[in-house]
Image (cartoon, rainbow, N blue to C red; front, side):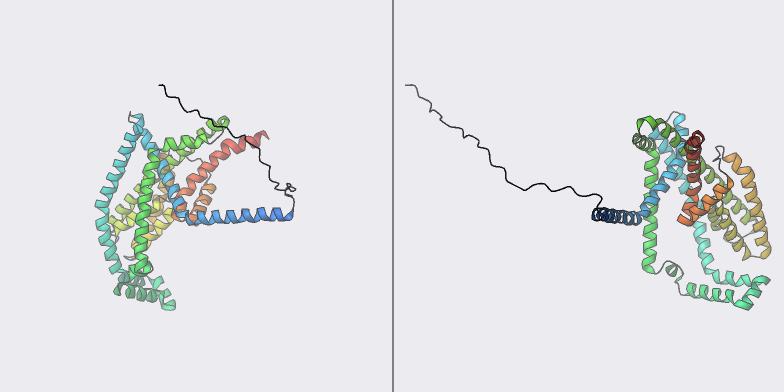
Length: 374
């Protein structure tokens, strides 16, 4: 017998529409001209702006490191492009530049750091005698007789060194020394990593940035931006070359005149030479003061020779080294260096001149033509 399948007799329930709940009638829209509405929006905007400004201020050190890393990457970019023109790919060219930089840093550390540490240690130990030797100068001796400046300075230096608290007091205690060391090491490592990253991926970064610009203006913005990067690179390479020459000059002059602590002084002159305009004022002052501890005649020779070197650098070396001139008036250069130094210290002085050059390029290519057509 054949089995019957049970019949499924399922009835679908008819979907009955539910009654819409009465939620009331919509009120009148907000009056955007009402003082309360305006005050609410203004207060909310002010609070959001204040919060963003506080957040940016808290992360200001990170932004400064990013700007410096971009600056150094733009400075290394011409060297990378030099190897790219010789047939190397971007990654291989960056690897060659990194190897050269690491080799230079290692060689510099091996040659300079050990004698510099020894001479700095000797300088700290002999600081009281150096301060006392300033009395050999008749003018300083007369000032000390009337105001006692050298005696007070000598007592403080002697007390700090004999108590072993010179470095600790300088950084605000033991905790301050640890914070300063860790902060400096972390900043240097971060700066190195960011510089290498930006150097390797500078074309990709600029390409992504240019895509944010409307297509109708993209080519124009890309050309101006590339010209700015080229100017910054030329400036960084030229300034670094001039700083190396200044450090070698200080080393040779200090060795000839037997100025004490010649190696640290040469390193200081090199670092000061990286800062446009005001850097040599700092380097000349430090070099002259150190030479004054030997004799006033030595200090005078150092001062006059340094001034002569600065003139040679400004009128002979810089025009030949900096083939791609920044094309900036002297007044703009001075004002940019002063403002940058006052805002961010030596770092601001280093960044101010190429930033001013970029602003001048934008004015020449964008603003001035529009004003001429108006």
